[in-house]
Image 1 (tube, rainbow, N blue to C red):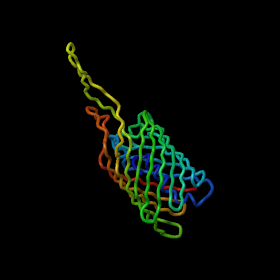
Image 2: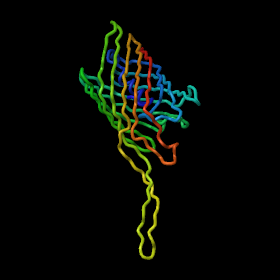
Image 3: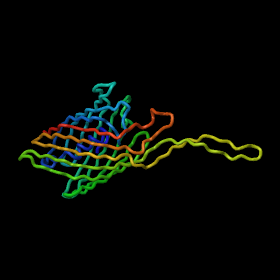
Image 4: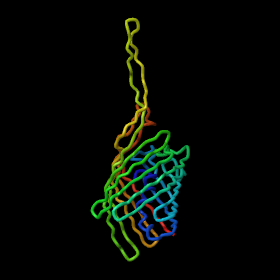
Length: 273
């Protein structure tokens, strides 16, 4: 899922753990990952940064995990610059027809970070997927904390294709389509006319108020690919995201959300000890 470094890390955690149920004791995993165009529901910083993020995971049981990923960005101004760390505590439960995922994310971004998602202070999410051999159906919700609180929902479909390459290796494709929606908060300024009387004429004054709206944020097409051989997984996720309902602040291009329909790819290599 997906949009932005935070969602990509979560995606790898939730989707690429096919081996986590094979061993009952704790497992430790490390990975190195790259995102070609960091974005948050299609919103990007003006420099269109790419990102590198090594990740360490501790699976306390096959269902409970903790991970942490420092993020390094690269753009026209900075080269491999540290911008913060994202940590996650989560739970996922897999049955024959259901996948349940619950997690809490705590980012630690530097104050000078230019990433769009750097205002995020914490996020809690839950999702449920109904699994079958034809089409998997998923729905989820989240709450995001920054200097205000926003709520989001998502829904999507995917079709898992699993090919046994050899006795010790497997190749998985997961063509997916997701829709993301959530609250957006912005200031609205309008002119209010105050009625007058016979002695004093009416006056006009500008009024600014805070508005919260629930809108579609983005549509996304992706094809996650996982090749697993022994204790090694190679992961790649080509994605095309179409952001929707961008916030525009008149006269303030620095506060106006920047976007374009974007193709980006996330790749990674993971090793399980």
